[in-house]
Image (cartoon, rainbow, N blue to C red; front, side, top):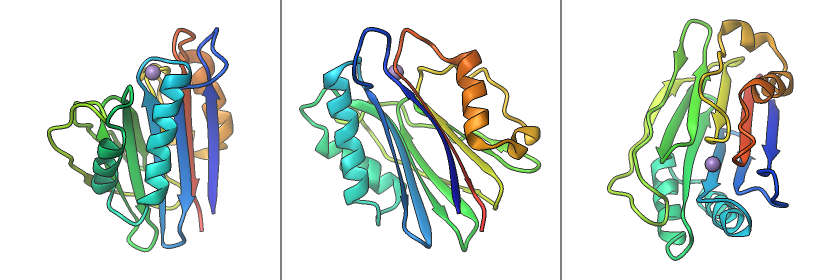
Length: 191
Ligand SMILES: [Mn+2]
């Protein structure tokens, strides 16, 4: 069962948030994506929502193939940066693909993994699409966030015991940036 913590907040002065997300529970797999449309306001929102729509449409594909599909779909938009992960419940793995600076962490019992993104902008510049697979066990935390939240927060083994929403609230309170849209998503999956 998925337990999700979420903060999604528009930059001060805008009514809509340019950062979007989706969590798709497909049973054997779970696909999760976060997208940050370039700039802010309605054009950024449109771009990030379009990326998310294409994640939904292509959720059967691998994360790298999903990002590539979004790249083609977002041509002509302001563009976005995004990260897509797919959790394989039976295999106890998580595969990640990121283009541009949406940050991802996997907080395991003994180790925190930081998947690396490829530089680029979805819909504009992407020279390659790559993905990497990590262990992901029940109780591990997946943390994904846009650049509206500073990367300097600590999320260690002790964080794993917190409710994801409680942890999300704490992180954004201390590390949220009010001069940008903010999106932080924390997911734990326990059978
Ligand atoms: Mn941003």
